[in-house]
Length: 275
Image 1 (cartoon, helix red, strand yellow):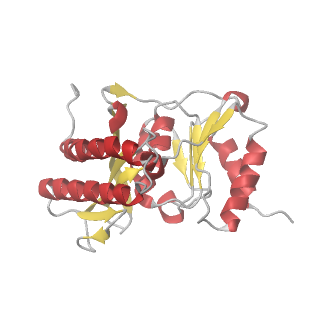
Image 2 (tube, rainbow, N blue to C red; image 1 turned 180 degrees about the vertical axis):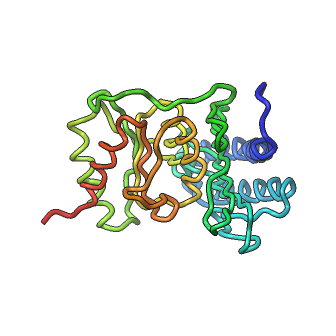
């Protein structure tokens, strides 16, 4: 990259690129495994773990005092951390499992504030299959490789394309019903709704203006940490369904400023059972 990256973003980019090399080799193999009787499920879980190990080693080597919150291994490091990495080594695992080239590495960085809360200081989402690196730093902006990103400027719901995550069989009936009500309310209003299967990339694509907005209920912190900051630094809103921090509730509504209120209203309405 020609841009001069900060030390933190440089560390994140180097770690992501190193993990991506092995993931790309694994992805080439899983495309062959998917047609076998054995199936690639165990292979993919091992690819996920190997990527997380690489990321942890690289990030820890560069910043040995920082804590971690990681999808596979959970929280580690001091409970009184000042800085914490929030890592999803393979977002879009089901896509990876099926040979679909839409998955990413997501790394967020949290900074502890004097009042004990934390803020998102930096985030990076790397899509290895097309070498797209989305990154943001608080107060600096959001970028795709070397180009500054901005959320879309659409104001009309009839022109908007939103993204979401379709609940799968393991989620609660209440969440599935909330999703169905939201979809039924939104579909007549918008140009389209997409489900590509990688929450981190959904948020990065909102920041890049590819989607006008994104919503999902009950997702994990490591899926969203980097993307929340990215949307905000690209000029958008990334909130919960109320006043809460999405990292606390797991509910995310990310959108350009013109349509955010309408999208959140539709999601909240969908969350409200009839009667």
